[in-house]
Amino acid sequence: MDALSTILDATSLRSVVYSKIPLSAPWGLDIVKDDNSQFWRLVSGSCAIGTPDGRIIEMEEGDLVFVPHGSAHWIADKPTSLRMPSPEFVKARRAGIPVFNSGGNVTTLIAGHFEFDYQALHPFLKDLPAVIHIRQYVTENQLLVKQVAQLMLNELNNEKPGSRVMLKCLSEIMFVNIIRAYLEQDAPQSGFLSALNNPRISKALTLMQDSPQKNWTLDSLALEVGMSRSVFFNQFKQLVYETPLSYLTNWRIRQAQKLLLMDKNNVAEIAANVGYQSEAAFNRVFKLKTGQTPAAYRRSKLNR
Image (cartoon, rainbow, N blue to C red; front, side):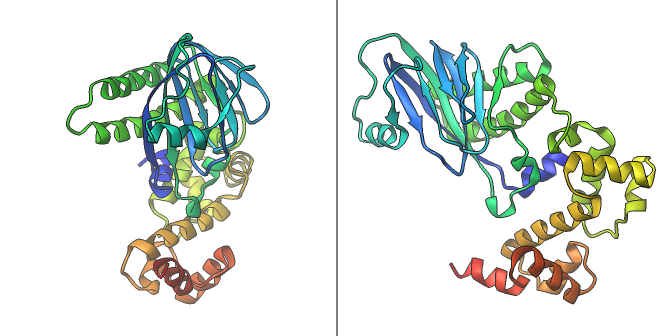
């Protein structure tokens, strides 16, 4: 499996599409800070988004804006419009109370969010920018974002048996294409996203993630990806912001956390599955990284 797929599996990517939202001008929403990653796609009309870093993005039809860290932001027909806090808007919609239907120009949006297991938060997620704005639809992955968004709109317009599942799957496909389109559109020169774009470093990530139980060393990883030991070490650290073996340790502990909650195997078996032949060594590293022994971690999570 490729590096990004393994990461998304490990962080338990889940998605929710709220609905197609028609809004008559003037309208505005203050989106409160949230643990989830929000996305907005402009189907028709016009709107502006006030980003977490203070910029204003004037969206065009077909544009998509993704706020990866759930940061507070706003969206409105224009920057000067009065804005309603998003919890009040959601409450009114659920109660069937009309909101933003004054008869002005109508803007239609598709909105939703992505969820991750923050217990196992990965550097990939931390390294995403404050806002990703997908536009133009010239590159292959930009076009795929547009096509997937159109399929989502079709499901929202014509609900059929299985539409909820279709929307969930389509939005997860959307997430991957947002990342791909961002890498094409704004290819970062450093950080974890640039590591995914680097064939040799990405291969090293895949090797460690797919087979954490192997006795990987700096030499064996460098040999597998066809680089000298020193060049591999320096390039990996520059892009991933940690050494290869530090990344491997953190990946093993994240996987162990997941297995402790999902697997009925004992601690020694889980230790071996993530690359520790000594249960005592695994216990030491696990406690160093999480503040708890594996057994205590399992009890604290399962007894909630």
